[in-house]
Length: 197
Image (cartoon, rainbow, N blue to C red; front, side, top):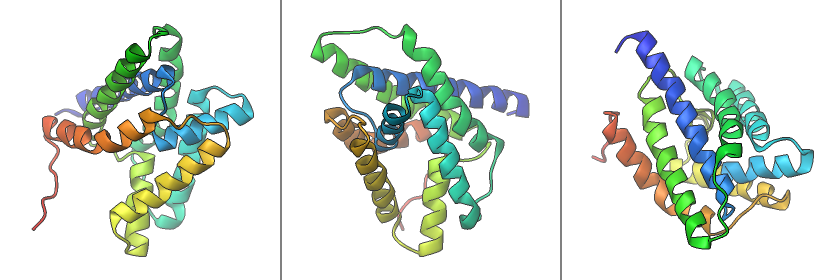
């Protein structure tokens, strides 16, 4: 695939990802751990959710320095654009009083996030900020990857909740489902997955 087409794919993927995040936040039934953290910062600072999300991504990228992770242009654009796209989408999203409709909106957002992840990763412009943080930490400490991920996500979830971020059933739904959905998305976009020996 030519570089220009891959760059377009990257940005479309990030825009769609922002839509998915916006749908989940807008449903108000809980969100993913890192988004709980961003939402907590948003509540404490009165910044928009999207700008708070950008701040979180920049803090994560700063943690890449001692871990000696290499930035790609996709990494930087991921850090900056997803939050901005979420802010752009949210005013246009429908508001539902019905609980079932909000659950459906959350699930749609989660499906979109998984699809968009495969789209932007397959553009091959670099990993997302959080992915690089977890991989770098795992390589530095030699801990199992699941333990590193649990450590980070548990910490940001707790901090976000203490700052007023929303932890509800959507948070659990995301935790249970996102791994399988992202794996499916990566297969769809032809991203090779490591198999156990």
